[in-house]
Image (cartoon, rainbow, N blue to C red):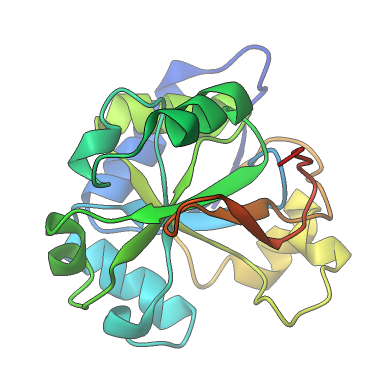
Length: 205
């Protein structure tokens, strides 16, 4: 199923429809400020397993990020960060960045893993931010493409995405044509931040 949501005039009924699918363990595809992504409710184990299955990996081996609506509940998911790191996040988000931070002890339990880090995203895209706000907690997310894939049109064109993924996810949100560039990934777990993947976002570190 595909629905069109205008990012400048968001239909709250469609947002609620997406939230209900997430709460039932469904996986949705949605626009971000970079490439389109797929995601599920972070606190729904069925959803997490479904997302891992779509990526053809075990949940314990998955390297999902989480999308937050803002920085207010960051301490629920990451250990205390220093002032320069918080300032970097505050100045960069919402934006096309994934910040790798040291996870709290609760995060590995969600993913059935021993993972010590978690990627944090706050995309500059009101559609997914509205979904996260309405859901009341973060969305676990991964890009449609794998890192070794060349990002092709079907990762950015909603109707090409629909043709490719309609049989595998519960909902695809058409929020307009997406970017063909991924987020910039910054590792903040070892003191000074380090760019580990240069994407669409640019930082002067």
